[in-house]
Structure formats: structure tokens, C-alpha cells
Image (cartoon, rainbow, N blue to C red; front, side, top):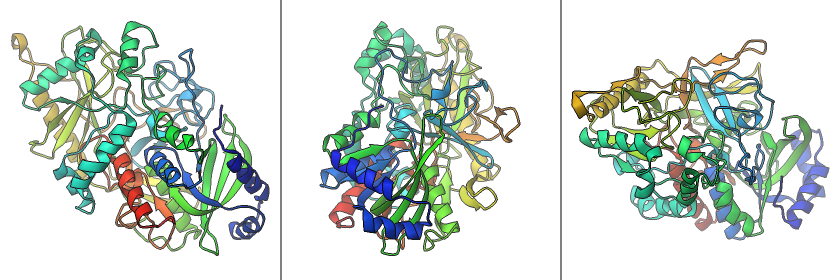
Length: 549
């Protein structure tokens, strides 16, 4: 594993590591300040928000140290960098003894790319590794419409400015483009083409959405020149063909090229505390590739950006408030979390030429904004999982879910629990809205008088690949009886827990820059583009207002 660290950063990090002790944080602060050069700017996490912060801060002339709990995954020429979906190994899951999707196959415990977080009535997925969620997302970069965006942010973020400046900027750096027509015409994409035809006939106005994919490499997948990955929907555990434009290949690469970014993988942050001089003490465990403790690292930071993901960032701050390491955090911290309105469904009894594990990722979207319950969007997906069969198309849908989730500190476990009111009528209404959209979609098939059907009831659980979880140490793993989301957002919401640029209230120099800022959903769309564009908008203002001078 290669670490791109400048000589200056190596000296700095070595000095800090040598100064770290087992003393309480407030005492470590004094010792470090006296014996080592302090870190001016640190970013915790390397996902969409953290990558934006790293690039723009380094371009502004700042030296940045980035801590990432996962490992760096340089793409191997043999096409075996990541685990496959159908035959998972330790590379698939973050420090798990068994596969977290599909059958609970035993695997080696390893710092794999996908973590399963199980809360009360909710199971959420999060990426781990240099590149964060970009390693495990499908690649969809889907801009919400203004009426739903304004509903989410209550007009505290100017949609016109986002539309004209920050959404385009994010799409440019992420190198996102819709699937070319010549690829969509290939047999491997029969499913999405049929799905789109059904959507058009039912009045749902399907369209190709920008994808963070290199379509030239996807074409090579179809020609057999590189391992099939995108074209078989194999994205949950990483992309082996190199077709996915992950953050380590754009934002982070550009930041490292400035010579001012030092990424330290396998550094898992455990505590953030306030020092007596207004700086922050960050404690992290350096771990090996099996998750075993290597050493304790303690850093003194002047400007700190939290980008550990919606759940990771929220947990760090909720714990800091409960344990009084950041006692001035307000009561909005840990509230307004949501599952982005994710729901899942499948349509069966379609032509047999639609094969399992074909059809790629979410390249097509259709919007049911006239839905009688709530405006939703749906996307066609490749079939994956134990219930894949000929003539079936899976879909994921998204709705403007209310931000009813919350985090609470558990003193018995010294951890933070995620609570989700799955039975709340405002949440269960999502399933009804999804079922209405899928029923409408099915009416678009009118060949030979045959109408396809829903494979089963639409639900907020991914029935194709249900997550597994072992609830007790000695119990066997099994399917989680809970809602599932791949799009967790919220917990440290903009203009509530933070100001309008993400600076945490009562703490100068402490910023949230990731999906934790988003209250519950991103307007019936995949959240990656909104998170990236919002981070671009916020860092622009942070720099122009000299908040990190």
C-alpha cells in the first residue's frame, strides 16, 4: 500500500506520534503544543465531502492531513482488487466475520470496503477506504429538482446558485456522463431499455442520469478486455475493471498532486476534544489490515473538518457531547437523520432475455412527481441476490422521507445508537408511494395483452440482498428484520447544529462537510451529487469569509 505523504508531513506526523501519550486529552494538548509542530488543517474521512475539503484547502495553500479509517485500494492489473458480490471474502466487509449481504458466509476479518451499521429498525451501509462512499456507490450523480431541494433545505441554500455553479463543478471533477446510446443498445442492457420503454408508456418520463463511470472501460467490459464489473451490477464491494471514477482518482488525486495533502489510511478516530487554547485534540487508533490495534495517535488541530459520513460524523459528535469532550455542542446534534426515502421493488414476468446480473447500475431514472402520496423517483438496477431470475428487473426508489431518525449515547457500551421510527405512518407511507409508482410503471408494458406484476410488496428492505447481522457475540448471523438504506444522511444538520456553511455552533474552526448536514433526504435522488456540490458551496464560503485564515 502506497502512502502519498510529503516529507514535511512525514516529519510532522512522526513528531506528533512520538509526542502522543496515554495521558488525558487536556494534558496531551499541552505536551504536544510544547514539543511538536501543530497540524493546521485536518480532515477526518475521505468521502465526497472530505475529498472536496481536501482539494480546495490545498489549492488555497493549506497543508492538510487526512485521516481515513480504511485502507488505500490501488487498482491491480489482475482485476482482483476487490471482492466479488457473489463470492465475498474479507475485502468485502469492514471488520466482519461473515459476509454482510446475501448468505452469511464466513470470511476473514479485514478492513473491507463496506460496513453494515444496524440500529433500531434500520440497517445502513457506509463505505470504508480511501475514497469513502465512492468505492461502494453505484455511480449515480442525480441532481434533485428545485421544488424538492427547497423542501429539504427550507430555502437556506440557494438552488439557483447550486444549479449554475456547484452541481456543474462537482459533475466536472467527478467526470460524470450519462450512458452513451451505443452502449445502451447492447444486449447486456436489455433490462434498462425495456424498463425505460415501460416508463415512457406509463408517462413517467425516464432519462439517462449522469454516472461517475468511464464508459470507455465499460465498453471494454462488454468486449471482454477487462473483468466484467459495472455491466453485471457488481459495485457494492468495489469495481475491479477500473470503470468507476472513485474519489481517489479525481478530487483526492488532484489534492495529492499539490504536494500539500497527506492521507493516513487505517487511522480510526475515537475521540475529539476541546483544548484549552481553542484548538482540537483528535485521538485515533492506528490499526492493521485485520483491524488489530497498532498504536494510539494524538493530534492537535487548529481547523478540523468532519467528513466521516452521516453516521460516523454524527456518532463522533454525539459521543463528544455526552462525554463532555465538546460540552458546548447544541441539542440539535444527533437529530434529523434519515434513510433518504430508500425503497426497493422488482417487476417480474417480463421477457426471458432479461438475465440475472445483467443491466448495470442505476443508469436510468423515472420520476413520479404526480404520485398521490408523495413525489418519488425510481431507477432500474441489475439483478443481484438470491432471488434473481430471468424476466425480472429490480428497482430502487427514493422519496422525500422526513428526518425522524436520531442518535443517542449508550453509556453501557460507550457507543452511540441509531434510532429509526420505522412504524411511523410518515415512514410507512414511503412503501405505499413506491408501490403506486411501480404499479404505474407496470402499466407501460402492453405487448400481447400481457401485463407484468410486482414480484412482491414494495418495501424499505432490499429483498434481493438482505443484510446480515449477528445481534449477539455467540449468535449465528441472519437477515436483518429492518429497513435498509445505502444513503444515510443527516444527524448534524446545516443551519441547526451548524451555521449556514457547516461550522459547528459554539466551536470556531470545527466544520462538518459531509452528508450529516443534509436533513433526511436529498429530494428523491441519490445523495452523492448533492453532498459533493454542497461541500463545494460551503468550502467556497469558508475560504472567502476567512474562517480558516
